[in-house]
Image 1 (cartoon, one colour):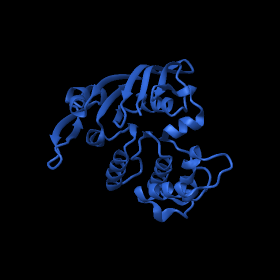
Image 2 (image 1 turned 90 degrees about the vertical axis):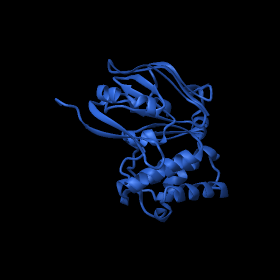
Image 3 (image 1 turned 30 degrees about the vertical axis):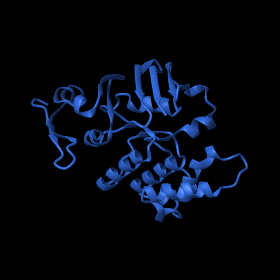
Image 4 (image 1 turned 90 degrees about the horizontal axis):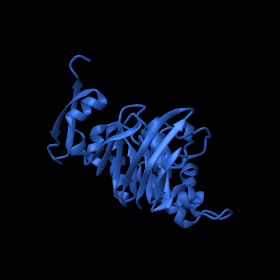
Length: 257
């Protein structure tokens, strides 16, 4: 399912956080947003998972206006892993992941075999099946991140919005989780701080700076030393991964900084 942002602007308390942003994620594409802290990446994603209504412009899922969809229909199409996902109540891991099935259930329906299979597969996929009976508040940050991703996967969305999904994860888990998400086949729109992970997994990158998109394209075309110096203030050296051939970046400080 395609995702489209058309001239999206977000203004809060007189401050313009995002200005006139248009982008498209085609069906099944893995699309990344990269940029420095405070550039507007999370604000854009909040508009896509309906946590924040744009001041101007439109967000569309499969050609339909996001804000015209019934919330249940929207939740059947799209799941999100916010950067600041709340975890204030000590539900068990199994109960948290089962919440991902609510958009597919009737108001008074019991959990079905399909629901149980979807939850089990999601927990197994993120490597958290052994945590099913643990309380969410007893988990480490990395464990909690995997459980919240499992909840989104159990929702079986056609669009997955991820805001810094590799937070708190060790290196192996970062690689495993992004490969799992990509293999699942949904359209993915994600914000990533790690530019090497972005280069490895994303079909398309949008560089966000000052609330605007300043560059778009394939990682190899976008992540140039000149752009990285201008936007991130670092000197970048481009190399190729010896096995996959994927673009990888080495960084050091710019002279004079």
